[in-house]
Image (cartoon, rainbow, N blue to C red; front, side, top):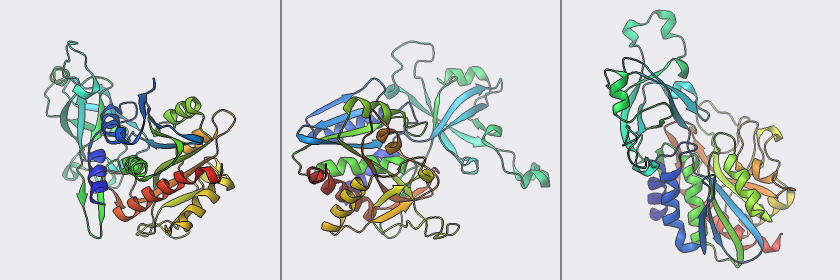
Length: 361
């Protein structure tokens, strides 16, 4: 479990807003190459790692991107206004420290590749409470009213730092351990799924063809899953993602029965059926594999949120697809939290499921 913890730390601490997943993809390629026969990056940016074998073929998808921000306007005095990328709850952004991924060659010299970008630190500022009227203190601040301060005195200084319209912005957070083998960081949605995919491929001893895909732009429309599934056309697929864990104040059992430390989550339906309704054949495959290998699991029916599985199962003439999730608290925030025990069990379930795909499809 120590190795998996270090892998998760490495993945969660790197930065990759939707559309800018390069840094994450490079790590995944290094970590996964010894367990596959072929690796390529498609034109949209999906990392496709294939282990050749017999039919049926199975696609494992885990999205690389994280929610973030993007520069949309720079004031004359150097304050920066931004647009959100992905689903933020605005209150979690206020007064955060952020990283602006700046161009090291603001005058246009050099390649300006993502891996060469430099980190510029800033803060999302707000009016101090001392200067707020009573009605202002009681009002929720919207992201459209927030700004970033990088310490610059002018728009020109900001530009000289390599920051321009379209510069990507991420939260500045580090991975830390908490009690009872729990950990917290930004971007567990979905670097935890990526870690599970890599570990499962490491553990699986299968004769069947496996496509492990690090998909891009999931948080802004499941885009990479759609294009990669179309190209691969697998016989069956599994998306790995986080699943909303309750068991804490504010969430009742009627909202979700999923909790941390109770094992992998197998999705029956999400987004009130507008996302995926998992085919019975896929549910049987996942549930029976878990039972045979004594892997404790949970079932989930939810009204909100969906995963890459929604795009994959609607590709071509339809691809049977399921979802395995790791229970995670406080998703889409800078302080996501999960149990390493659940992470390990998710990897075990994916590995054993891949080995048994020929018995079901």
